[in-house]
Length: 551
Ligand code: FAD
Image (cartoon, rainbow, N blue to C red; front, side, top):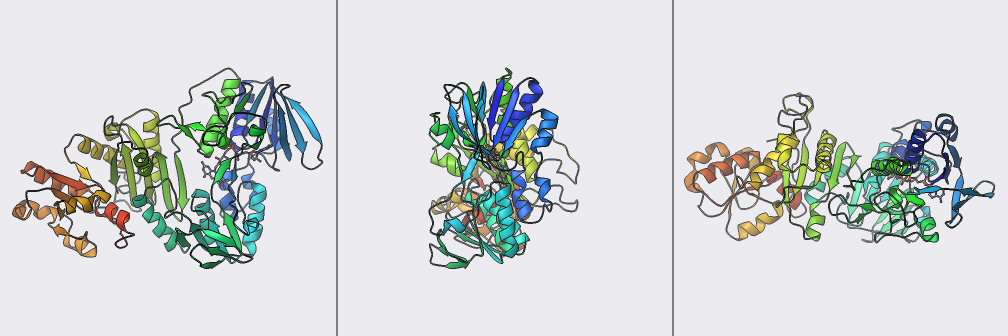
C-alpha cells in the first residue's frame, strides 16, 4: 500500500508513525514544505524567549532518524503542489531544485495545518508570525536587536510571544481589538489575566486595532503611536485549504476541509486531519475549527487506524486547552457562557475560588474556576480556570468527566488523589459538584454577578456576611454588613423580602443562606462566586477587584 502524507508535523507525523507500527509493509512518504519535520511548534515561543535555550531541543526527529526507526521516506523542503485524483498521484516539487515528481498513493492524508491570518494593514510585511522553525529563526534574530515590540492579537500564541519578549527584556505592548484577551474566557474570568499581564510589565491595549505598521512603530485606531522595533502578528490562524480546494475536495461551512467520522474527505481515498479540517463539536455536533496540538495528534493516530482497518470512534472535540501567561495558568474546555447565551442554550453557571492545595501547606495558590451546566440534564457544558497552580489538573479532570458523560453532580463524588501539598480533602472539582447539587436541588439557589443590579433594583436586600475588614476593603454598593457569625443574633435586621447573600467567594454565603432559609426566609439567593466574581465582572465599571482570597 502506498500512503502519502502532506504535512510532517503534528497530525501528519502522528499518522505516519502509528501507521508504521500497524503496517510494516506500507510505503509511507511524508512531504513537508518547511525544512524540518516533527518539530515542537508549541515550544517555539519559548525558544524566542530564551527559556528553551537550545534550538535543537525543538527538533524532535529528523528525516534520518525517522527513516532509521520507522522506515519513513521523509521529504523536507518539498511542497505538494497538485493532486490528480483520477490517477491518484501527488505532484511534489523540490523547493531547492525546482524538480517535480509524481508520487502514487492508495491513501493520501492531508495534514497541512493552518496559516497565520495576515490582515491587509499597511506595513504588514514587516510583521513576523510564528508557525515553524524558519519563522522562529527570523524572530530570534529580530528579538536580539529589538528594544520595543508590539504583539498584535491577544490569543494564546500572542500572549505566549508577549511573555517571552518581556522575558528577553523587550518593552512589549499587546494590542487586542476586542475588549479582552483569550476569547475562550468569559469576562469575569479574564480580569485576573489582564491584571497579571500589566503587572508583569507588558502594556495592554484593549479595544484598539493596529491601523498601520511603520518602520519603527505602529499606529492604533485610537491615534496612539506605539514604538515597535519588532512587530508580531498573531491574529489567529485559518485552515490551510489551498490544495484541497484546488483538488475539488469539499470545504465545510467554517472554511475547513470537510471530513466524515473517519476523517475521509469527499474523496474516499483522501483523508484529512488537524488544523486544516472541520471537527465535530463535542457538545452539539456542529462543525468546529479547533487548531490544537492534542486534537491533531489524536486525529493523526486515529486516521492511521482507519487506513489500517482498525476504525474507532471519533468523540468530537471540546477544545480543551491551557496556556501559561506570566505565571498564571489559564485553561478551558467546552463552551463558555458567551457562546451558550448567544446560542440561546439554557445553562447554570458556577464560580468558585479554591486554593490549589490545602491552605495550611506552604505554597498554595488561589484559582478561579467556572463550570457551566445544563440545568435540565445536569450535563457539563464547559469549564474555565485561572490561577497560579493546579488549574491544569482541575480542567483536565472536568474534560475527562465530560468525555465520560459524567454530570455536574457526579463531580461531587469523584474519588481524587489527596495529600495537603497537592489538593484539599474536598478537591476543587468535588466542590464544584457540591455547588451544582445544592443549586440544582434548590437547597441554595444562586444569583450571578451580572444579575445582581437588576435584583436589587427589584427590591432585593443584599447582605454582606464577610468580616468588617473585608467590607471596608471593598464592598458592593447598597449592601448591609452582617458577618455570618452574627447573623443568628441580628435576624431582625434582615427584611423578609427577597435577600441576596454574599461573602468573598460564596462559601460563607452558602452557610448564611442556609441559616436564613431554615429560619423562614424563602427567597434567599447566594451570590455565585461572591464578591470576588462580582468585582472581577464589574471591574471595568467599578474598581479593581482583589481576586486571590481564600475565604
Ligand atoms: P502542523 O503541525 O502545523 O503541520 C502542518 C505542516 O504541513 C506544516 O509544517 C506545513 O509546512 C506543511 N504543509 C502545508 N502545506 C503543505 C504542502 N502543500 N506541501 C508540503 N507541506 C505542507 N497547540 C496546543 O494544543 N498547545 C500549544 O501550546 C500550542 N502552541 C502553539 C504554538 C505555536 C507557535 C504554534 C504555531 C502552534 C501552537 N499550537 C499549540 C497549535 C498546534 O501546533 C497545532 O494545532 C498543530 O501543530 C496542528 O497540527 P497539523 O498537523 O494540523 O499542522
